[in-house]
Amino acid sequence: MHLDDLDWFVTLADTQNMTRAAERLHTTQPTLSRSLARLEQEIGAPLFDRVGRRLRLNQSGEVLLVHARRSLFELRAATEHIRSLRDPDRGTVRLSFLHSVATWLAPELIRGFRARAPQVQFTLTQAASYELAALVTDGAVDLAVTGPRPDDPDLGWHEIHREELCLVVPRDHRLADRDRVGIAEAADEPFIMLGSSFGLRRLTDELLARVGGEPTIAFESAEIPTMESLAAAGLGVTVVPRPRPHRADPNAAYIPLTDDPAHRVLGLVWPLSRPESPVVERFRRFVVAEHWASL
Image (cartoon, rainbow, N blue to C red; front, top):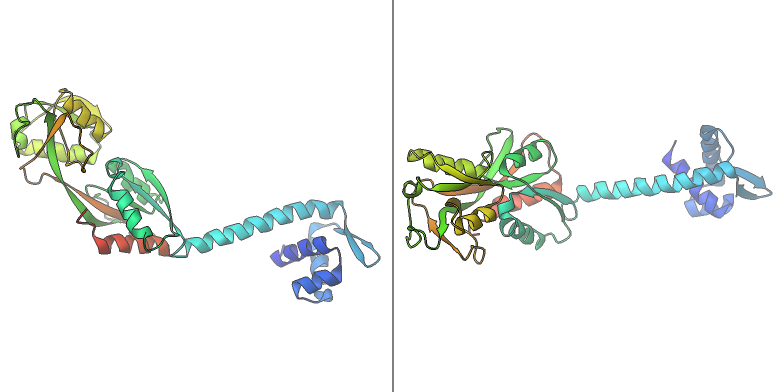
């Protein structure tokens, strides 16, 4: 079924007059008549009753008109959607990021980019580091902000920020007044940790392994704020990135770690084997060019 035939049929149904329909469509009456005949042959039934020079939709025509309008609307909507995806000024970026950067880094990236491309839309998801690489690889998202760097060689990576790691203890803890501390000084303490598949948990395990520590796990959490609150309550100590201003738990002391490397690297991840839409490429290039090292 030709789309022009369907479009012309709708115009003919609206005017119910071959001459007026041909004028509106900027075509000739014989061309429009051939289009209608072709459509009726494909449908297998006449679509109009001829009453003198006037055409009147019959029952078959009324049924087709409902579906034709719907089909043409959906096709035009799909076409506009595809055009928007190909437009670097108006498309959509599917971005995923760690829960721990949801209140600062992700919004800053979006805010900075939309200052240059205000009509670009974002579809956002949050996930743990071990899930983010899979989301990018599977095509569920275009880009992800995660850390540490995934091992997958099919993923591109650009470092955008480094966070200093701190030991979190209650305000009355023996180490609370220290300016800096090595992880070895807390190795015998009970630890509050993220689950074993989280990137920050792996970093903490590596720091402890360097000093021969085998921590006692007091609690495993899925959220950094929960770890901070439980440490502040005295359940144990924990290791977290230095909190953003006004985000720290007031009942906890955050002591920078002296160990090397006591930091978490955050970066942008994208697939190397899948072509990017123009708007996704534009956003990725923006992030890479800006580096965001000062955040």
